[in-house]
Image (cartoon, rainbow, N blue to C red; front, side, top):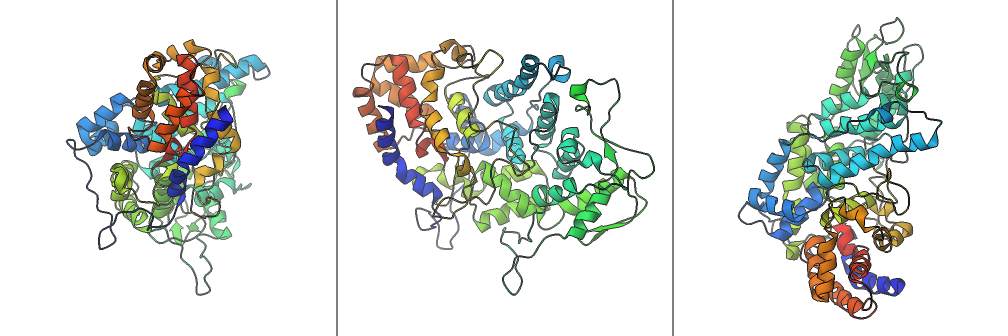
Length: 542
C-alpha cells in the first residue's frame, strides 16, 4: 500500500520539485519592466499566515501556530529585532560528558548522547530560533567533523551559537581558538619550527575568501583566456601559517583524558622561543609587521581575510543558500554582499538583509513565486519542521529502537557531525540535468525518502515518547477520528502553510477513504502524514 501511495503523491507533486530546481527565469517569476522584483516587505498589519509560515521556514527551525501569530503581530522586521534581543541557547555539559571512561561503551554512548538531545531541545523549544538557524548556516561551511571527545562538540556548538549574530571577525577569531577546531585542523600543532598548513589553507579556502576571485555579485573573475583567477597562492598559505603559529590548548595534567584539550577554554599562545613566528609576513598582498605577538598576528590576519573583497560575496552566498535560496540571483547576492562590506561583517545586519530582501519575500504571495528561488530542506531541517509542526517542544525519546539516552533524530544527517571539513554537501552541487545549484539535494537519497515515508508510524508505536516531549499527538488523532476532512485540514494548516495543492488534497482524501479506511485514527494520521511529507511540496522551502 505504501509503495502505491508514494507513487500517487510523487507524480502529483512532481511539478513542484521541477519548479524548485528550475533555473529558467521565465518559469514563474514576477518582475517589473526593469527586471526588478516588485515586492514590499510586509508590515505587521498585512502579514498573512502563509507569508509568516514561509518566513519562519527560512528564519527558524520551522513554523508553529504560536510563532506564526508572533510574526503576524510584530511584522517580519520586528520579529527579527526581537530575536536579536533573545538570550543565547547554550549547551551546559554535565560532568558525565566532560569526564568519562572512553573505553566503556555504555558510558561513552551516554556522554555522546547528551549533545543530540540538547540540540533538539533547543531547536524544538528554544526561543532564539533565528540565532540557531544562523549558527546552523555557519556550521554548514565552518565545519568541525568528528574529531575529539563529546565535550568538544558541545563547546564548538556554543562558539557558533554565541557568534552567529555578531561580528564575523570575532566569530573567526573564536573559531580559530576553539580547541576542537585546533584538533580537527591541526593548528594546535603549528609551530614556527614545525609549521602545519592545514588550518591556514582551510581558513582561506572554506571559511573566508574561497579559491577563486569573485565580483561583489558572486560572479567569477577570469583572465583573457577564460580561466578563473585564483584568490591565493601557496606562498599565501605559507605566510598565513606563520601568522597562525604558536597556539595550543590551555591544558594541564589534572584534566581528565576526555577533556584533554580543555574544551571549555580558548587556546592560548605559547611563550617558548620557536613557538610563534614573529617575522614580517605578507598575505594576499597585505603586510603584517614583524615583531608582533601570536595574538596580534592573528588579529592582523583576520583583518586581511574579512576585509578581502572576496569574503563578502563568498560568505553571503553560503548564508543565503542555507537560509533562503540555493541559487540566488547575482542581484540578490550583490545586495547582501554590500551589506556585509558596509557593516564590516556584522552578521545580524547580513542575516536581516537576507531574510527581508525582495527576492526572499517574493514568494510570500504563492502566486508571485520566482522559479529560481527556494531550497530543499536538508534532513535535519525537514525533521525539525516536522516535529515543531506537531507541537513538540523538546527532544523526542527513541525508546522504540534504542533506549532513553537516544533521541529521535534525522536519520541521514547527524546535526553538527559533518562527515568532513567540506561539510554535508558542496555549495556548488547541482541538480541532475538542470545543472542548477541544489546543494541539499545531495542528501535527499533513496534511504532518506524511504525512512521519511515509513518512519513516523514505527516511532509512534511508543506514543508516550511524543506526548512527553510536548507533541500534540492527540490533537491529530482526534481530528482523524472526527473526519477525513478534519485531519486533512489540520495537516494542511500545520505542515503546508494552509496551501496544500489540490492534487495532494485529492490524493489524501482518496488514501484515507480507501487504503487507510480501516486503520485506527493514529495510523491514519501517521500513515498519511509520512507520505505527504515525502513530497516536494513539504520538502522544498519555496
